[in-house]
Image (cartoon, rainbow, N blue to C red):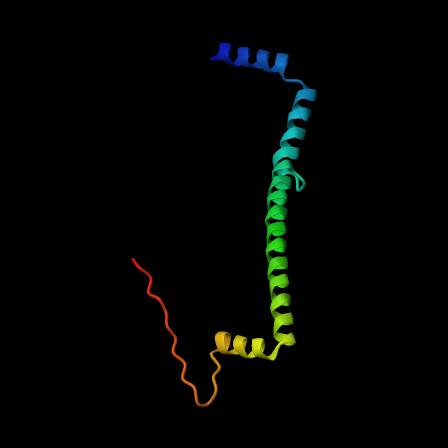
Length: 105
């Protein structure tokens, strides 16, 4: 037992220096522990990428909505068509039938 302990102690004295401990500690802190660690930076980059995709999606939705709004404001017939299709509005003397297709299993 004493030989194992003394051999281990000699190995530690020979290979482990204060500079190596400091460098390893610094790297460990920078990679895993710190608020600005590499792991955290990677997660932030993924989040930014996802948010940029959402921005592009919603910009497309906004453009499409602006086009529809422009159509509705420019033509009275388009406004009536939109109201009938989207909100199922009808005139007093009309009946509306909604036909839906069943999904095949």
